Image (cartoon, rainbow, N blue to C red; front, top):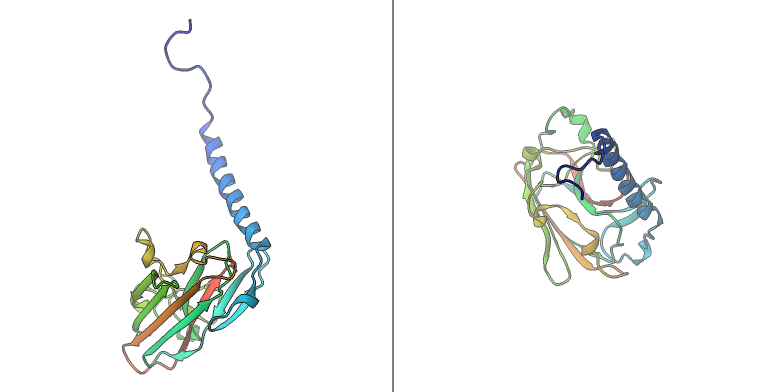
Amino acid sequence: MKPFGPSRQRNAHPSSYKLLVPAVTLLLGMGCVMKAVFSPRHLSNYRGDGTISKIKFLPNPGVKVEFEHFPLSRPYRAIYRLEGLPRRPSPYWVHLVVANARELNPNLNGPIRIGIRGTLTLWSRDSLGHTIFYCSWSPEEHGWSTGCGSGIHEVCAGFLKLYGPRVQQAYILPGDVRGSLGEKLSLEVSWDPESAESKYEAWVLLRCGGDL
């Protein structure tokens, strides 16, 4: 009969766990990338607003939809139809892109400020009118960002409130795009400037895939 007491089996060395975690993370990341590479994009099925095109980036190919440009010096309201949006294995992120804003020489070391003040509201709903997300904030106070896949001369505003409810995250998940032809989604955009002095234009970018 074996005596009671701690097992004599040698425990795995802690360093092995340190190697295991990044290895599992890498495998999961590679799985997502491979799924993106082999998932069809079905651009011809898109019947919504804006201009849809492929993102040709081999490690993570994707889809983007760009909408009309508008001046940031005036209030702007629009409701975009996203009918037939291709279903992808990763989310569609929603950004407001400001053209040529890099000439304002923003400070890239902290929260990016470019001196364009206003309130941006993004509201996405499904075909039944249910809210997918609703975000309203000041990009100047929250901080602008770079690297949204639009170009080296642009800055953009997207909203991601960590640890908040799903409704406060400005992205569309694969589960929100149901059916092979895509759900009849909508995206309502509202911009309310604090002044009429800005000479810059912006547009909304819906983006899935691209730079990792």
